[in-house]
Amino acid sequence: MTLARAGVDVTVVDRARFPRDKTCGDALSNRAVALLEVLDAHAAVIAGPHALVREAAAIFPDGSRVLRGYGKPGMIVPRRLLDHALRLAAERAGARVIEGQAIRTLQRRGDGSIIAEGPGFSRAAALVIAADGPGSIARGLLGAPRVRGRHLAVSATVYLEGSGAPRETSEHYFERDLPCGYGWIFPEVDGLANVGVYQRADAYEAGGVKLAVLLERFLARRVPAGARRVGGVRSWSLPLGPSPGPLAGPGVVLAGDAGNLVDPLSGEGIWQALQSGIFAAETAIAALERGALDPALARRHDRRAARVFGVHSAVRASVQRAMTFFVDRELYRSRLLRAGLQWAYGRGALERSKEL
Image (tube, rainbow, N blue to C red):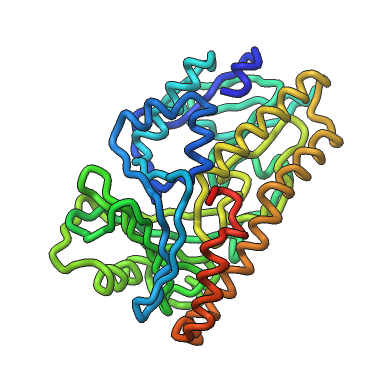
């Protein structure tokens, strides 16, 4: 959208056909909602099924909790609706959208341009923005390492009817069997609540318990026995920030999950995807004006991403470790320590994607 508005000839190639569902927690921070307005997708989103989130709760094994409110609400929006709204907005902005077409390889030519190829498809471009998630085929062109360990998380989710989910409050349960992670129950959309578990990959592997089992245990503890599942359990991987490699190089810029931009503490990635897409477009526009995405421009892009996403992710990873210690040692039982956590959590001093 940003490129098309600037008059750049831009083509979006996606292996899916829209509308399509996508495994996700479906949560948008209020700053992600604000970007939807910038991108001309907000009206379409609020016209469809959604829930507002005005408050968040961090809940501990004994049931104690700390709360924070939001001056502007976030939202729960099924990805089938959200991504289709973005796709339509891209076309309105002037982008050409090709659906149902996978890209299997990217090759850099001698003149710096990129050849994108897939089954029955070949296209040359001055620059490619890769937003193809964890395991992006573009990472190899930048020399970025494989994502693993503390740079990766795993998650499983299921939709429930009769979950007892509170209205307009997102609940995050910090449990002893989910170190470096949590379980969640989000407000219902059309009578269905998105419920799931999230854990950093190295902690998950060290625990030796299957993700499906962790989800079942969480449901047994926190969800009414009469809740009914709608659809099956779905799982996915989340590449966590800070990025272990560069996000920009000759002819290529990474955006969203392809660039390891997911918040390590919350697992949130939609605001990061939207904002990094805008940043990638701005770098692409500068590169086209210069005639190439030269090393100086690539370094400038990486510094900007580190300042906006990387430092924040490193701090949030430290908070994640502290929360694991807090729960493991049962420090949440101390009124004094819980009051201190309430003060810090309620102020939102370590938040970038949410305006409190």
